[in-house]
Image (cartoon, helix red, strand yellow):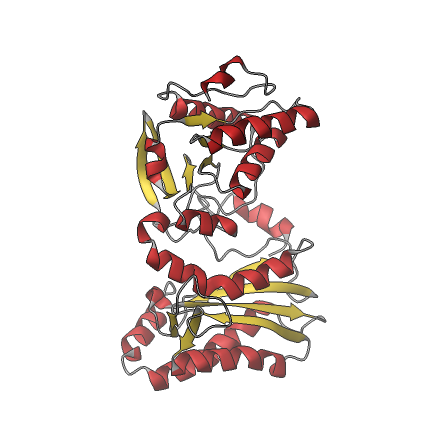
Length: 354
């Protein structure tokens, strides 16, 4: 849908609800572009394979995390690679099968005659053909798919796409795909740390949370709040002060908004200290931390708190939200006798507490 049509129809569309299947408004899905595509099986049934191995095993060992596909899963992978045979303008760059979903990366090198959605619909139809042959109980699902557009057959209706828009994004996508089996094993090995916790009460506040909630019970919680006016020298002083406090047992708490706060929390994270991070965007039910945060959660040294609902859009955080998050960090820490806030520089008279 082009932007002009979208704007005209927006007023009649009703309330916008969170969706991972929304297309980018104004984007031409026939033009040259790279995409990461995700499709999920109907009702999240683990029909495509089984993840085996151990999360800590190196990649070149027998216990390395991997997906062992079912016969149906092998056929889905075959259908994915056949996209490049049917459409010479498209390269298949990557594929990662999981028990109830898959991720794949496509490169539309030249303009295609039909939108990408039509290409992927043909892929789904090929997968459904195998599904009917290999799964005897498919008849009930087939009837649901015919009578209710909320149902697909093998896969849920529609798909999720991400567009390559930034330098380094393709490498992050490939790393994410390769690491997916290991991440699932980590979730299974530490279910309490990766389950989204709703309505976690802290004082008179309520959060959604992922991670080690017992960090809230540590004896020293220290708010990291740094003015945007800090010089580079003052930021480094703040980093030194807070990391020394963390080394002595303090859990650092911050939304990590200003450059100084980001520098402090990044340094503490890299040194392996426990952190409580507040963020503006909430969690979907299947959310999980990204990148190295996943490992930090598995090690029990990270808690992520979100006071508000999840949204799909990339939106800039507002000033009032920044102030609210910093106030929440202060309130979380307020019960600790040794808690201080770093407002302008690291020359704070309460340092002696540590």
